[in-house]
Length: 132
Image 1 (cartoon, helix red, strand yellow):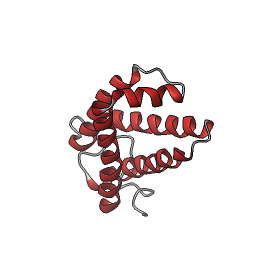
Image 2: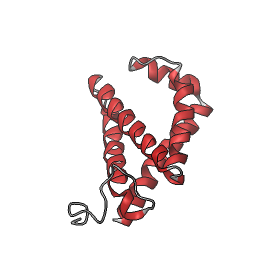
Image 3: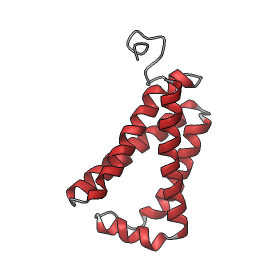
Image 4: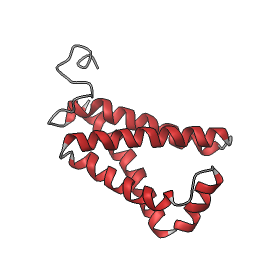
């Protein structure tokens, strides 16, 4: 479980860190992409900050509740990205779907690899959490 956690977390946070880099280096392109899917362009600056802080929160985990808030943000962001791309019948929708699964895997296995334990994630000492 530890390897699943670190692999999923590394891949999904690397994608998010790369998107932060993209927002910082070419905000006009990303504003156009946000506009294409119907989102306001001012979100580019907001998402740059929120994604960067979310990646840091997931890796630092101090306080744990902040990491859980970051996971919730990543969950809803990837879910909305899948729905927006699917509504446009955009083939790129597969990438947010993969990220969605990676976010769920990272969240579900975090208590197997890190401490202190997150309150709302499956725990290794719980009968359902120790079967995997």
